[in-house]
Image 1 (cartoon, helix red, strand yellow):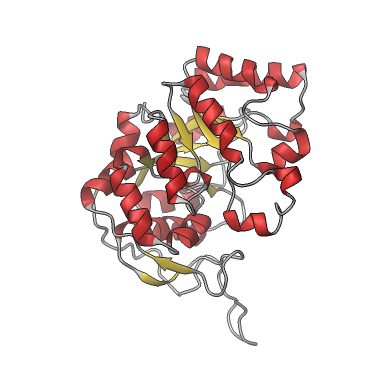
Image 2 (cartoon, one colour):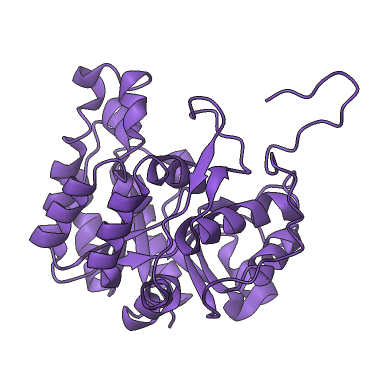
Amino acid sequence: MSPAAGDKPVNPSNLIGLDYRRVPQWAVDVPLFDVHTHVRTAEGVEAFFEAAAAYGVRRVLSMQSILEAPRLRERWGRRVGFIAVPRWAEFALTDAFSRQWRADLAEFRDLGATLCKFWVAPPMRDEHGLTLDHPFMEPIIAHALDLGYSFMVHVGDPTLWWNSRYADTARFGTKRAQYQQLEHLLRRVSPRLVIGAHMGGTVEDCDLLQELFDRHPNYVIDTSATKWVVREVSRHPQRVRELVIRNADRVLFGSDCVTEPRHDFDHYASRYWAQRTLWETAHDGLSPIEDPDAVGAPLLRGVNLPPETLRKVYAENAIRLGLDA
């Protein structure tokens, strides 16, 4: 969407001219727990925490460097908890990286982390041959279990990417093939909790999500990756509504907000506005967030979940599963 000559440039976080500081009255008044963020630094994130608070988010779980985590804890206290992640920029299938990863797991645990994240999207399969059932992962998984961790996993990406960047399935595997490794992990760590990031990576296929729920009692999903989730839920809101209500104890709230110096209040608020509007209302119109993957103008068609389901998704499930410790 391009502005006409002389017009004010379009804000990619506010395509429809909202005043994000005029927060709507939501369907439920409950403190939200955001289980999926990336608060990368302790400084320069005031706008993020301001937007989170304005939209009812009491606490977030964040993925960031182990080197930054102590400073985040000192600056923001209980408003942020941690998900243990390795030093992905240094990733290599070596004993040295494995040792460092295991050491970082222990250090994150000392900071109170109870979740560790495995990012095994198709590029990891292509570049390193890494999947969750690769022998390299076994000592990492075993050490995480010994330390008392539960798990968050990113295995799937948007289905439409298999028509473009992942079209070579000999390199990346099919979309369904990504879930063989997930089921390996679910069996390996059962009954320990496993969270499927981004609506399990397959909000496009509610039947697959239901199959995974039915086969694995330790599997839950989060709602993160706001643009992707809004776009795909809006294609079949009634089907997603049925899935979430049927599995109301298995869905957690997440935004996937990533803090960057260039982002302002509106950027972060747009993610929370879109998420809450998607789940709580029957909105049927444009999404405020620019979405390069959308065909035409990005749409937001609300799911309008009942209040009892919203309370579970927003807070009660995270507390029951021990993520609010």
